[in-house]
Image (cartoon, rainbow, N blue to C red; front, side):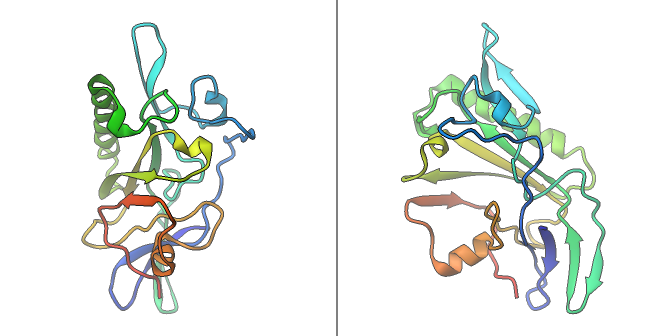
Length: 203
């Protein structure tokens, strides 16, 4: 179970533990869950922008194994050396385009405008929740990756701690290590991550 833990040395919050896969996720080998026609493989859309024909051009839904969850109670507590909190917040995936295999840099101007619009809408909506103190937009870009991960995606995180107060490394699905641990071991080949938060190691 993932949780927020306060590093007693640096006084910064980090995310540690395992992420649980949400029950509304399906997996089918060989199918990209982000392509049109495969919407059943992703959680229900939070927001969609559609073209004149009704086809979606940008979709947003919660992550299949979210770092933060809207339904989680904060439940601050002290245990031994550490202060802990549940991972209250939001973790959303933005499908930048219905086209598979195209990078964000290759998107036409009107599609980029759609991505910016939907990200703006989601950030403004998340800011209405007074429990959240910081909202972050980031994107992973991989050179070598499984085929279904070549679909252009962005991600939005909302957390109960401010950027100046804590670091929020990204946990790997199904694993106990965080991005902090990955940074210590060395980055994956071909992985470029833009993260606006300084990464700190849990103690």
